[in-house]
Length: 181
Length: 377
Image (cartoon, rainbow over all chains, first blue to last red; front, side):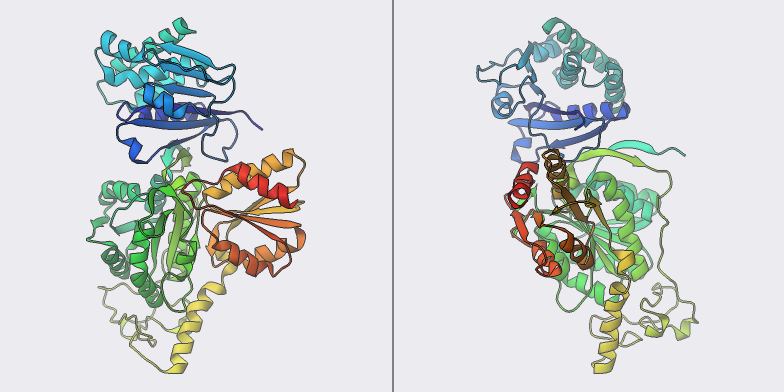
């Protein structure tokens, strides 16, 4: 079977996980790959833990849901606690530094713990770009899509006038990935 | 002309397909998980000279769609289970008065208001028999975002060609998931518009069987004087209870659909050439089934997928044909047993049938279907 990448992005409602998932899927499409993005539509989509899931594949994507994420992002402790249960073996787990990582992860899990929320707040004074920065960390450490396509997908989606801010957020994300791995 | 590649939800693809087909009127009462269809049409329809109306409820929405279509506009509404129930009376009116329109039902868990944000396939029998009386219906059901675009166009084409309501069934998975889609600049298939009367206005009869099984439909407001009623009617559209006229009308109503099955029945099969185990699945469940087929083949089990795209009329012949070939047939659907009964009827006891039924608000896992296929091999 062709390689199928399952990605889960999680955080709290309002942190922009849905948009991040859409951008990641659009970056894959820019590369001519197939992508499917799904999200939870339940009450948890408002506050609490929120997740967005993306499947990327060169081949057709049949079953459209994520069952064993090989790449996962968690920006909050609650989302980490709630969504880490079905990680694939040897998965890449990107977490904000504020998250206390448990010792029950599958063998071979590569954990990258970096200051995403703090960097967005302190370096850029804009916590709202934490999702874009997180995408930078995720793609920087997984190479699941090219950096160039990710940047293009980000700029296609963000409001006009915020391009530079989002470029900076991405750059910091890639830098955090380089430092953290 | 190169297509535009986008990441769209199934609901958004439905909107693109409807606009490509020439939709000019939408009346609806937004309901999860179909809401994005109304949301996007509210923005898009006025830009192409169309009308969007949010009505006071689903009953009025369906009535408005019938009225708009009678003026010549391609008309649509979109809903989910609870709203679909409310639309049934006027949907029946549209079948009997032969008014072209498209009714989208993005299925969620039921009964009643059920599970608003979860997928189900529990309205497939309602799509067939939700409205009372002997009536034919066309219902088609996509399994992907690109297919939603194409089938929405086909739904309008069928509606216009056969002068009938067409139900576009979807499920929450297909409606909400975002997927890669190539949107062409021009519709990928020819757009069909309803036949117009060729007789002088004074001689027009809206239900004249001598004009064929699908008599031309005039637009209200263009000088053709005719009557529309839900009562059994004669050629002019006025009530009649004469048995001979009743029989002619009901026969024609059915003939126009059932004599055109070659055109209306759509399906896809995967790996069925040498299959011993067939998996019958539709909508999002067919995607789980596709994976199950691949997993089974990896284990050396000759499995194949039978995916009806046209759900109604039911593809009896398709099932009968494969029933002779297969050792067993697995039927997977997100309800507690609806189309499986149609499969059993069509298979006429020629093949053992294994039911994989799930109505817990979750898409059936490929492994669940695989397990059933391995049990019957």
